[in-house]
Amino acid sequence: MIRKTFPSAITIFGAKGDLTKRKLIPALYNLYADNHLPSIFSIYCVDFLAVDETEYKGWLLEGINSFSRTGQANPEKWAAFSSRIHYVQGDFMKEETYATLKDRIKSFEDVEQQRGVRMFYFAVAPRFIEVIADSLCKQKLCNRDALDRIVVEKPFGTDLDSARKLNRYLTQRFKKKQIYHIDHYLGKEMVQNILAFRFANYVFEPLWNKKYIDHIEISVAEEVSVGTRGGYYDSSGALRDMIQNHLLQLLCIIAMDCPKAYEAEAIRDAKVKVLKSVRPLTAQSVFKDVVRGQYTAGEIAGKPQVGYTDEPQVAKGSATETFVAARLFIDNERWKGVPFFLRTGKCMPRQSSVIMIQFKDSPHKIFKDDVQPNQLIISIQPELEIGLMFEGKVPGLHMKLEPVEMDFMYKDDFKQSLPEAYEALLLDVLEGDATQFMRDDQIEAAWKLVMPILDAWKKSPKKQLNSYAAGTWGPKAASNLLKPFAKDWFKLMHENGVVEKMSEPEIKAQIVAAT
Ligand code: BG6
Image 1: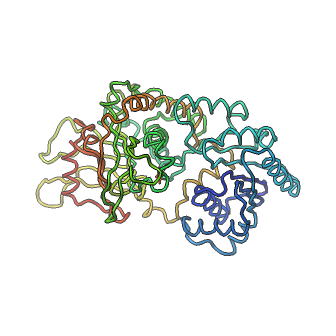
Image 2: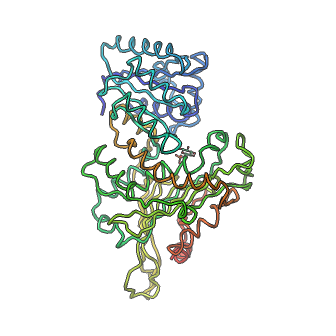
Image 3: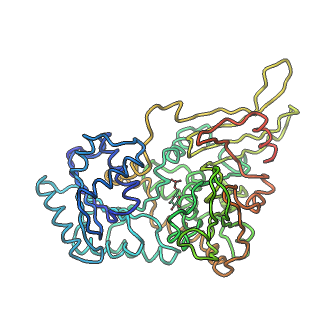
């Protein structure tokens, strides 16, 4: 825990942005309300627009009331919290903005008579990262490596070269330990729990390898469309937006070896090792091992949805993918020959982020209806759940088997409400803990892995660009990718955001279909 008396000056560049309103301020407010922030802190929100500070705070409050996990803000707590928020109007491109910011931060520290932590959060478009970094440096605003940190949001570069260039730029100005590359998936409760599950429960470790595991599916299905983000998304696509970061992070956590300690460098070393062991794709294998798709008009949860190329700010005839499925192999002793199937897409029937570990079938069967190889299911969202599917005896006079599930659900075992990913990660930054943040070499290794795909698609923009109707699970080619390991992607049964148990015959049908 941080010392409660340790003052913290928190600066958010991009004060008027969506991220600040929806995520950062609600997260800081919840940390404050739950007494996790240091007792002395100040928040400086910097942006170009001239806005009245009272109106600005009203806008932030709207954000908390609409998006915070805790619902409407408590009036007294909001009054106390918001008195620490200061709007600093300024152009990111002008030195005077940083000079003003410096004065504000220094007078805060002078009053407290203590030089505390300074956190600078870059919630800005990528084109501003370099100029802000440079100005912080020139103004000596972020020059004490034990106390001062910058937090950089993705996209971190648009390809390997640009990511390398940006890494070089930042590391010439700050110490590596001052740079926090945020991937909000690493702050998700269940994602963090995978580390606990794997490395605090030795029972699974002997099974966690090619001898017992047949294949692994990592799927992040989103119900949402690109909505108002067409401008950004059209030059990004699902590969850059989701696979290069969130899904490869999940792959690392599932596939990594036990690190020597629960400590930032050891964990990040183990993850980089995974990325470096993934078999590189080639110009030829891309069209065999990677499937892309783009949604067309359809219906999601009873509501009509326009096709991707009719979304605002999306180029007509755009070839940007809104869906990617990939088959990857990790060429090391633990995983040789085990396929890892990754899938993500927008406009799918419902939100569902699930990792399914399919164990091998038993080599020797003694029951005629023992048809189910075991499955370990880790549901990250919307439900947080870990389930192990196994064969059980149906009560009765005969030896009849049915698949059953041994289940751990957060909402049954833990009563406390779960922190948002940004709460956990912002507190980590204030505490100087980089364990759940990406390191520069990891970012580069992830880009290196996806570069053959980007290059192949750039060369043949529309080759094998499948379409899928909004509200479906993606193109058929994505199911074919699983063959011969499975017939279709694993599905949890969700209704209205609630996981419903599949009936036994449904489970059996799915397992039989998959094997
Ligand atoms: C973001 C992507 O990083 O993650 C979005 O830019 C995506 O396109 C989002 O919708 C998904 O995050 P979550 O937490 O809703 O699964």
